[in-house]
Image (spheres, helix red, strand yellow):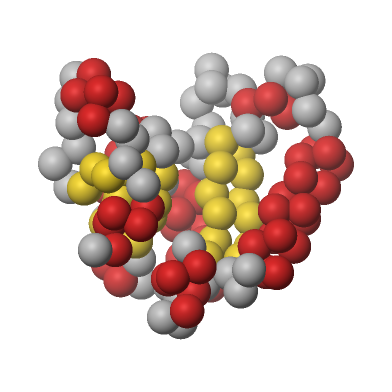
Length: 136
C-alpha cells in the first residue's frame, strides 16, 4: 500500500462485519479499530479516504454485503469514482466477486493452496501471495 501511495493512490476500505449483527463487536469499537488503522497507515504515508462496513449478518441478504456490489455503488456515487478505473484488493474470493459485480478489476491476495482450493476461480482477477507481488 505504501508503494501505491507513493505513486499517488489513495484507499477506501470496504469490509463485511457480521460481528456487529452477531453482537461480537459494537459499532463504536469497530469505529475505534478503523480509526487506529487509518492513523497507523497515515503515519506510513498511506491515505485512507474512508471506511465502509456492512454490519449485517450473512443471512440478512442485504445489498451492501460482499459479494453483492451495493457498497461499491454507494462509494462510487459518494466519491465520484469510475468503477472501470478502480482496483479492488481483497483476501477472499467474495471480494473479487463483489468487484466483478461492480465492474471493477481486482487482486486476490491468497496463497497458492488457498487459491487452488477455490472451486470457481474468478477469471476477472489476478491472485498473488502478497500485494507487493501484484506491483511487479
